[in-house]
Image (cartoon, rainbow, N blue to C red; front, side, top):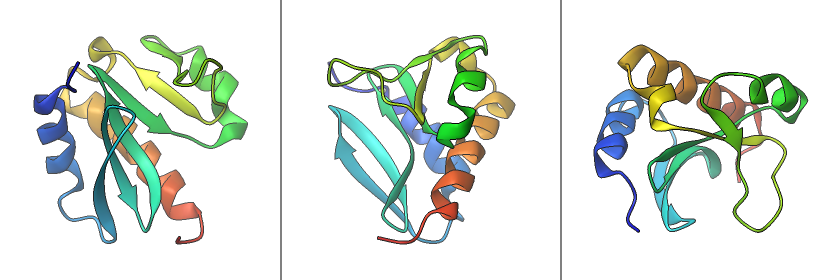
Length: 109
């Protein structure tokens, strides 16, 4: 299944002024990288957000959030947000910012 291209367009709009941005096909979807570190992406219809692993358990308690499990086991520091969780521009912007902030905290690759 292809990824949600409308969600991709919405994310691109949020990231258009971000320095070091690159887009890469991955996970059967697309990932948005900041200086080589993934910030967020799309898997089918879900938003992937890379977060600080220290906040993983806290994020899992939020509505519309589920574990990112692409290889048979959940990845700590990565979450999926269902379409309902990023329906509004504000909600999407908050999730994208969370991913971007974490990606920027990492050393460039």
